[in-house]
Length: 402
Image (cartoon, rainbow, N blue to C red; front, side, top):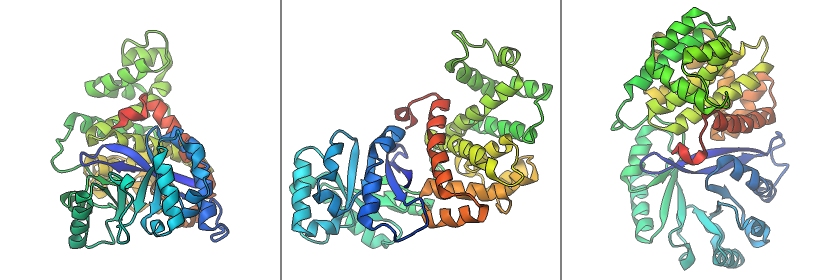
């Protein structure tokens, strides 16, 4: 199975959990029925929980709820998402009541138009599709849910207008694409400037040329970036005491090693600029997927170019700057310019693949992988490996990302 984790955010844009989206890895659509697909996803709970480090919301079918398959996950931090209509079945309703009684948690998918919900579901989450419900109906339904002691969760929040409408309706939880920070959030100008300088420096050596003295000057002339790099290097396993300065690190380790560390530092600064560590985490995760999977491209760009393409893919969100403007402001090779806008070159098409994986756009993922000649499962495996690598590279636990 292919599986991705979609961040669930609260009103303050903090990530409080992840929703699981999954799909069979092969293209034999219809080879598995809904119960088989759900069962395979449920079998991934342990590994996905370990990967996320947070609460998961995972879809299940009535059959799985009734047959007792969930009982082996009694200790997992999972909220099981069940169609609201499934409660119309007396056996399913009885099974839910039994599981609620022994400590399981359920969320419901869809507004409850039928019979009253079991009392034990008070306080539970109700998922609503923000794109398929008109604003007046959404506001009315949210009011009913809140009055009943339920927690509405809006999905499909893929642009800022929908986010504003959802939050104005009273919904406190939402999920969707990465979005530019709220207008009320202060801009971290120092982090933003350092990000642009770091990206320019990474781009200057994206063809694989060894960094020269210009790299030393670049680090020395940006105290904010130098301090961030020094903190990152001292927190890694470079020795008991670590380097005294970035210049000292260059002397000890060489420019190539320090430039490699610059990738993770840039990702962290991207999160600082966005006031959202999850954006920095996504940037580094995409960078590592692009670095790994991009090796399979014809005439594969240098690993530095592939890594930088992943970082560039979130810059518009993090900085609130349109891709076209970023392209004008940054001195980038043509291939990397393409990743910001047209994405007509293979590296840009790979970024499209990675975004489809991140957001669970499964049909798009298959089509985009076919165009590049890459198996979807290769992308899925690289994505999970990159998640672990980015988490470790950034040097903090998942609970510190919000």
